[in-house]
Image (cartoon, rainbow, N blue to C red; front, side, top):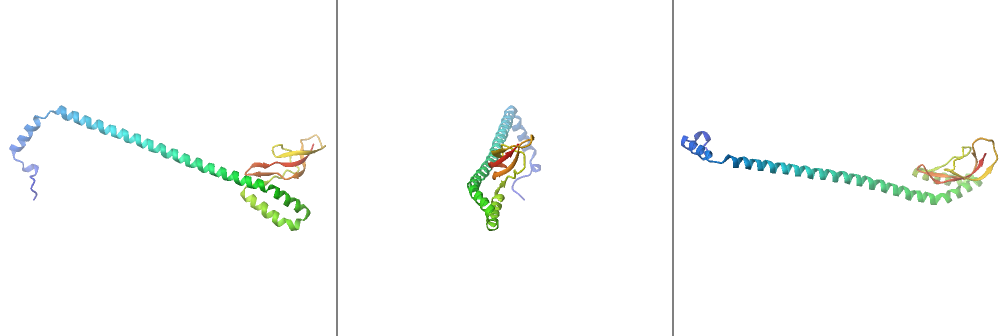
Length: 176
């Protein structure tokens, strides 16, 4: 058994004393205190919601920043490898010229180099007998032809694209 009397064990005199004490309490003060507490709770909830919104916005901003930096790094890496590929174009030209003279000896090295650069995004343009496009090729020679649209009759120097963008325009002979 506990030392505390249960509410059913209170004698009628104690209950009457409690009722008298409560009758003297100013209920407007209690109501005012309750209203103040409710106002404080509402203010705390609003402040919490405000901080939560700030945290969510900061998280979204950070995610956007992280994605933007990742894209910038990927672009920088692509530009750097593009510059490396561009620096290797004279070597490809030399291999191509040597291939014309000695195909059996140069073909393995030429194919290996071209294959490795192709994996990174380099593509040789095939412009032979295609309509002439000044965005892809430089016309350095002209020959007369039919009245149709000018076409590439001979590729004098190969052109290359890097991930779909022209890295070096081809030098071509144009008919028409």
